[in-house]
Length: 248
Image (tube, rainbow, N blue to C red):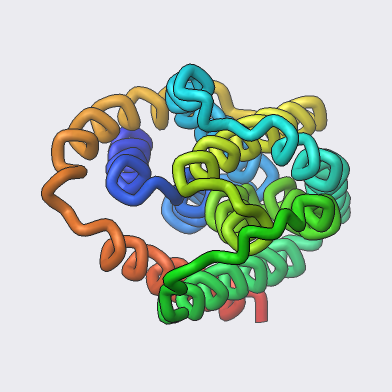
């Protein structure tokens, strides 16, 4: 089952470009019964492993805006550490229902935001003014969400870059991948330091993910991304509802 989960998640990542941390944690908790702290840690490490494969190409193509990335990390780094700390405080106190409820709220809000964003009309001209100095304030809660649930770095980060910077689409993707890799690595390290890690589970996910990534890459040109992303956010909304139901 662990190999299959890694396989399916990697296909979605290859086809849509999002979903590493967002899909992994809910599946590990609901399907395998993995404790929340370990599930988030493994989800972050799996996301970092996937983005580690993608990042060198983005750097080589000069698609990472290092100045913008620095602004993102100013808020994202303390945010992800705070989120990881908060999750383990909940776990240590045995507040399982509170953890599940908070995860449910995070997943539902992320899904609703992305669904509404999907229906937003496409602007012919983007605002070319640079508002990158606002990114630290926005990335602080995004980082906290990543540290607490492993979800949101890719989807919310790219939305922020599109809204606040004049970066070209390729630079948005490259900068967001770099931000996701660094925050996922830092978050997983914080969870690992707290003793929340399952190395065999991570290895099985990565093994299945390699096969899924290869298959997804071959299918990427023939599968429309936008409907698949929309289906992913609807599925995430349902999963978040399940977490909220079990925590009630």
